[in-house]
Length: 197
Image (tube, rainbow, N blue to C red; front, top):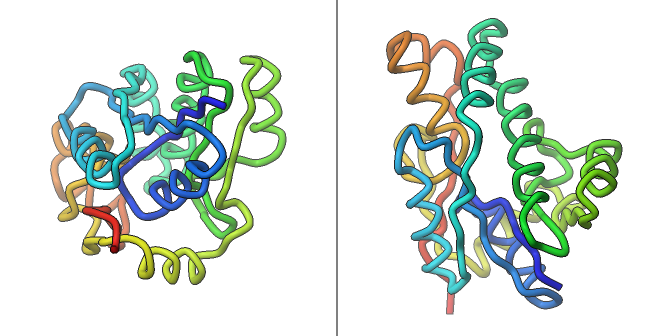
């Protein structure tokens, strides 16, 4: 089975890749709107854990709509969800038997509920796999500590290839850093730099 996995370079999507690698041929899909070259951080992480990767081009109109949603809401949740759903659809339109992501049981955003997964499967004739959907953050952290070399730090400081980096750049360019800080709460993120021996 050929699987395209949405990949940010963080520990969740890397653990999802490691789990799927036991049963499928996995290609890590590094999404970009073409706003920045941050998707290359995800490609570097994929290389560090010995997985093939490919650039997944996302529609800039979706980024614009997501930014407008975030500005209206004053928080990122709905905009990031909108982008994730678009990325799933873009991946599903490619030549894979299945698509996957690293969403876990207790994620607030993005999420893939059953109706969304079934809709993507039906519309694109592709399977949706969510290997972490039954696993909570504590278990993810324990698995990552055992199997991955990970850098962790403030979201804005960790170089990775997730949707947030380009959306932050769009907001910063139009509305300044202060507006970015208003919308995105301070939080830590991870970037995988290798496998533990």
